[in-house]
Image 1: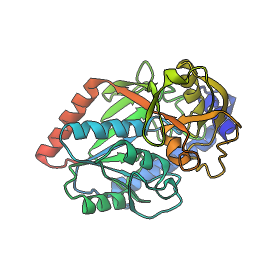
Image 2 (image 1 turned 60 degrees about the vertical axis):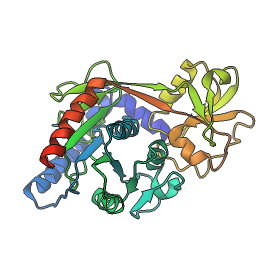
Image 3 (image 1 turned 180 degrees about the vertical axis):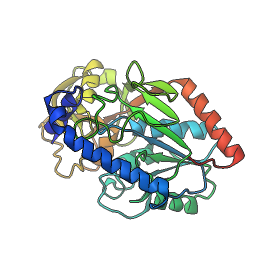
Image 4 (image 1 turned 90 degrees about the vertical axis):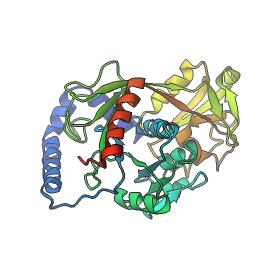
Length: 338
């Protein structure tokens, strides 16, 4: 599966033979999206709003774009402003479909790896998961009625939830070849109207008219143990490590570890959101395991010695200024729905 995903990502960079062969299927996919959007616009499919401003952080490409670090950074920013944010998510990859609050010690099997990471990373920010995001929003507001603003992890394509501010996140691949699935990486046509674009590439995606701001992702200079203690990466240099990543782009994580001067004796790329049930922490036999924070919330119960390296998100300060202005307008005048 991981090899297939990597092969597709390479094929999606150009409009080569693979993209051309899959183009008829992309036309069908696009037609379905047009019909679905039309049903919501006409009111035949109903959408709802929870009554508090909703900020959706999503993407239009398949695979990881870096939404979760943005949700975490955004939640901390709103807290620092003195607001009371709450987060909702579908909880992709979890085994339960129940609507529930995510606690710092919640099982990833019940709530999903990304919501579990968000709950651990943002103390004081309630996180709720549900199969339908409106159910998660209602449960959040029922349990925490003082919530000022709701941040939705993913959901640009989830039209059943009306929102006030859309943020579209791109990794450094941008829109790839610009084609819809499966001929390209796009989950919906681009450009689309969104309030803000965050991009990891040197330039924003082509043809966007939305305000665009750069983000820079880098590894923290420390690793975290299961007990919360931190170890400087400099102390790990020269030690053979076994690197694990169950994310959309594991090679990018491995490359950052090597760039930090770490010695990777072996690497293990697993499918994104892999539940790690069959993970053997001693597969390498002797080398300590190092992984992402998203993977650590699943692996620490199996091997407390696993080290997690946080991914830091450096977002252009002008983005937060623009976001604050847009959010203040909605808070002061009442929710202005899209």
